[in-house]
Length: 287
Image: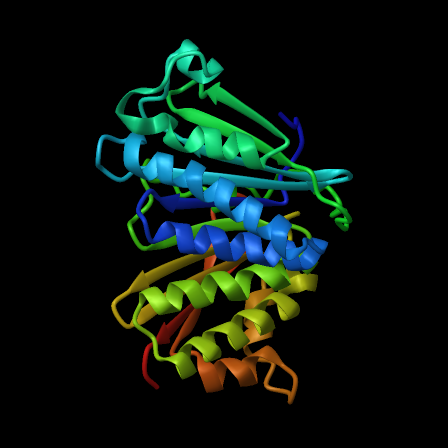
């Protein structure tokens, strides 16, 4: 189990729709580090099995937090899937006793696809499944130098709302591949048209590119709330005053001009920890 800082931390509600967001993050990661089609399929299948176990068994049919951490280091990719539910016994974690309620159905699949699998009990309750995948020629992503941005991706509520995705991503090259995919998946959940989903993807790409120099944390934090025919997006943390400067940059290649074309509202909110701020946007299904 890596004692390192993840490149991606994702937190969702444990429902079947969340699997789409997890797969989109994996697809962005695969593009960034150069995973082959077979490798991507194996990672997707194993992580989906672990996520489905959380959805089906961790909370007794109710929703709770589903947390996914992803690490890309020299020699492979590591993914941790975590719940805060009832967990498993020591024998079940070791694999000597089949978990009750069918929880073990996905574990043989995961063990067949991953090079190494480790199941751990979470101290405050829950289960953590670590999967290490051997990859042929991955590009190594640098380890974030600090975890100052990770907490910003963890919602304060004990269970995230059903249609909310919160994530922290580093480095920015990975965020450029991941954030547009996540926003597109959430736009589809909000019943956006194909054209409006394309608008959301274009806007996400521009946001990541323009906020690179304004970030005041190692990770870019993004929180997306999907309501029927509406999306709300929070992005940061940015240095104080930078969100306003970005919004008012109406030059040909400035963010402000694009916001005027594609967004339906924006504002800046402060962050309680330190002199930083978040840019908040609203997108409607129709313009």
